[in-house]
Length: 277
DNA sequence: AAGCGGCTCAACCGCACGTAC
DNA sequence: GGTACGTGCGGTTGAGCCGCT
Image 1: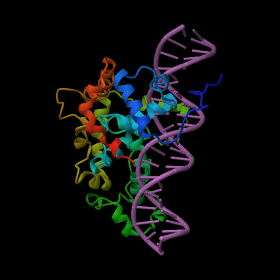
Image 2 (image 1 turned 120 degrees about the vertical axis):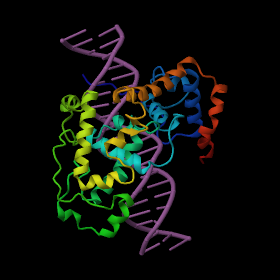
Image 3 (image 1 turned 135 degrees about the horizontal axis):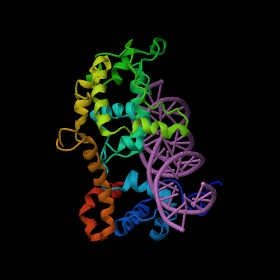
Image 4 (image 1 turned 180 degrees about the vertical axis):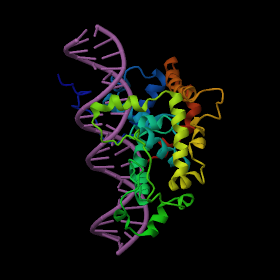
């Protein structure tokens, strides 16, 4: 069969977005909402493909984006979520309101992965890597390890089965099956998280993860983004659902026609656009 | 000051998925 | 059920920045 390209690439602009393009896109979305990404560039007067517009909006223009680096606590949560979900960046990102999958993916690949390796842990499985791979200088390791994490390296500790870890290497045809494994019921998830906490506490690694942020799963679960405590009357699923929905509602809200004047109070959120060269 | 190498992150690409017809 | 289409996702790339020599 073969799929057609998402757009006719002939005559379309690529590469970095200009301020004018950003403003056109933002103006259009804020005034008209998002109905069909494919139609957006045409209607907004942009020489970009819909995909490119979507990416630009999600990763950069969305007013609810959090700016600035990820905190240590967020990093710890990412590590834990990654151990559960594997490279499902969008799912991981859904637990961090205002963060994008791209941002988290980049952060993982450039920083967290490196840090875990220096700790002697396989970033995919969190299992200890062979000793020989650890021969790097320890001084640098110490620099990479957060102050709260310098307690232990997890060396020689056999991690119990964390088969739910996606290795990121399984064939995509098995994705569905894998999804079924990961998409546990929320009750299962809660149970898993409890077990996971026990697991962490058994690992020396757990101790460094827990220290400053108290990010065993209990604190992880009481974080703002994945809260059991904050929404004690809600199941984890419900609270997570609410968080995801808040964004959907936010986007849907634009369907009810937001004028540029309405948008003006948000101006400060977009000041970065003017500050760019 | 210039050259170099490593790092970061925005953006692209290709494939998978969901859905309408 | 098969096909076409729009969207989402994850992997990868490359330009620009920064620190070091």
